[in-house]
Length: 122
Image (cartoon, rainbow, N blue to C red; front, side, top):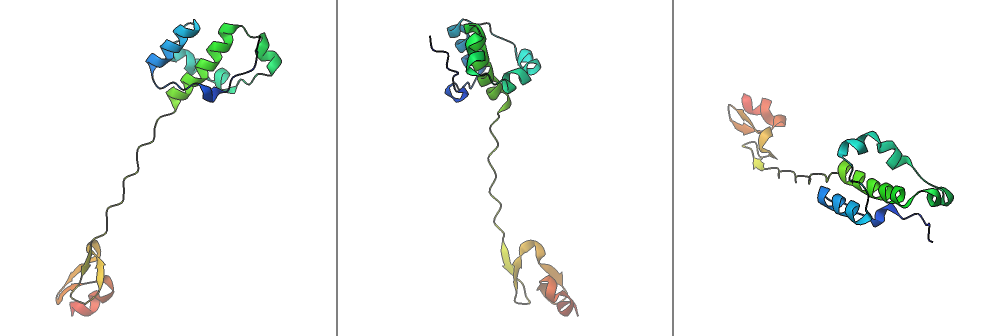
């Protein structure tokens, strides 16, 4: 009999239905999400030596491997895509400088950049 500990990356669960199907295939009990919240440290922190892994029953090994994969599904959410920054609209002021639109100022002699505002206000 082969008692090698499986790598946890071998199983990927992306939905509740996949978890239930794996449990049915392995003939183990389907656990509610509450169970994993209570036992999370056991599933995520347990690292067995080969001798310890060999002492576990088949059900315990299946439950551990499938449970770890299910916890990864529950707690790993895809990150939202980053929005591209809006392009900066550059305008030419009456003073002759190019500035972003939000920095353009109205002076008595026309539009100006912040640097030329005092000169254009006279």
